[in-house]
Image 1 (cartoon, rainbow, N blue to C red):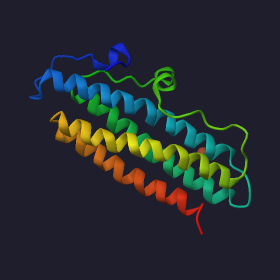
Image 2: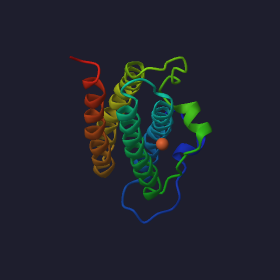
Image 3: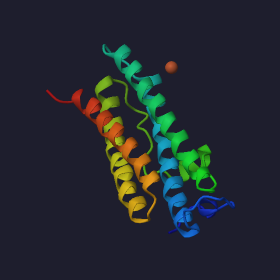
Length: 167
Ligand SMILES: [Fe+2]
């Protein structure tokens, strides 16, 4: 796997998971950390810049989404360190390694903001779901469980976003 060279760095620990498992899982976690950080900043971007008649409810909803992502960022980063790994959580690393495209800066209305976020939550949901299987196959049920928790919440948020675009 090619990622940031520090993504698989391990400290000594008394945890019983094998080193090989921990370094592979740390890479997966660091990759999702970068994308989660990126997604959180994009949701804040939407929170600040959305305009239109439904401004206030979207402004509030986007803040709720950002707060939830902030919790996931902490969960993911601290799982890395619990495994003896090194969490890579700076804006530079996030920008370099996120799977998401940059937020569109030319939109103003609510519908466009909701669409832009749905288009980012969907690939993020897939990334997280794939990580459940990957970490499960590696034998780390706890990290798979963490991803399952995130996955369920992100699926629900994608529904919230898409509900604004349907009907
Ligand atoms: Fe705010």
